[in-house]
Length: 112
Image 1 (cartoon, rainbow, N blue to C red):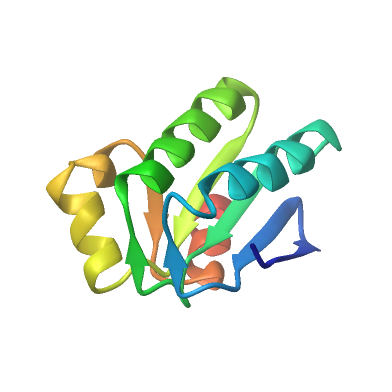
Image 2 (cartoon, rainbow, N blue to C red; image 1 turned 135 degrees about the vertical axis):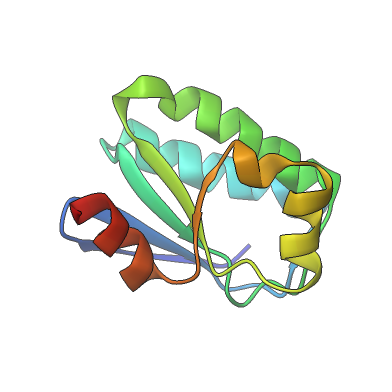
């Protein structure tokens, strides 16, 4: 599972460098984001712009991570499009997660 991170403002930008988020990578994905949380990152922007497919196991991991962040931070999903955006809409998760089209839009919305 390829995940790259950098810090911008108060946010850790985590970019998924995979085209598929499925059961094969879900455990490693969760582990890497949990490590970010344990290392003190409480405001995470998760960039899914390169992801072309996501299954329910990865969506379940995102819900689990959102619960971990809770009220002590932020988890914002950016760049979901195509089948990935459809999955969020079909499951109504776009109502649960804070979502934005891009990292810049997410950071701008939080700053406003």
